[in-house]
Amino acid sequence: MSDVRVAPSLLSADFADFGAAAEACRAAGAELLHFDVMDGAFVPNITFGPGVVRALRPRSDATFDVHLMIEHPERWIGAFAEAGADILTVQAEACLHLQRTLAQIRASGMRAGLALNPATTLHVLQYILEDLDMLLVMTVNPGFGGQAYIPAMTAKVAEARAIIAGAGRDIWLEVDGGITEETAPAVVRAGANVLVAGSSLFNHPDGLQAGVRALREACLPD
Image (cartoon, rainbow, N blue to C red):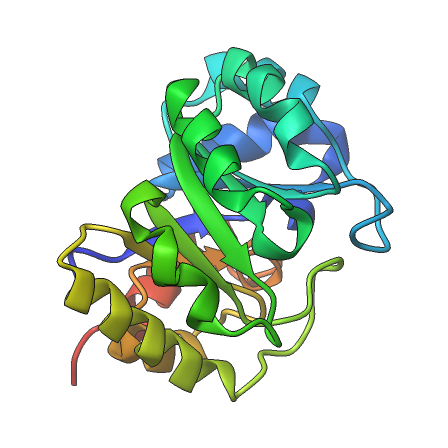
């Protein structure tokens, strides 16, 4: 359990007070802060860009985990590096030259992440594991918060963990979508070690800190 990290998603925070949300996440013990960047083209929603990352960087020492759900993500690598992102994750489905894009992320000083939509197979990993620092298995179809976890993704997480272990690489395995106290234990048992959660944390009846604590406790071994 000590290896499991919590990454609250700002998509579920109060857009009018991101600064307070960032500070509250860190105070609650979350190791990462997750930024869902959407362009209205790759996904049917528009959120925010590098300006939000830049504005929040002085407000938190959390690992800034930026997920680009956008077309042509390579155009924005430099901007997010300059803004203060620590991890930059791109969608496999949005990258024509995937290995090049991952290499460019690392060359900019950030850790390179790759996200896979629910219907995207793990075969894409075959030739790029050496270029990866984190794999994000989307457990809902991207675009909106508050969606229900897709049960079939538990097996996909387990398969991804086996591939990572077989490669002998220290690659974080992140899950995002419908992660709650009820769904988190299964994905952690399957091998996930970074949990992105939005609604279940920010809308917790006892507050954000209680939500983070409850998520961690749910993943403790019986």
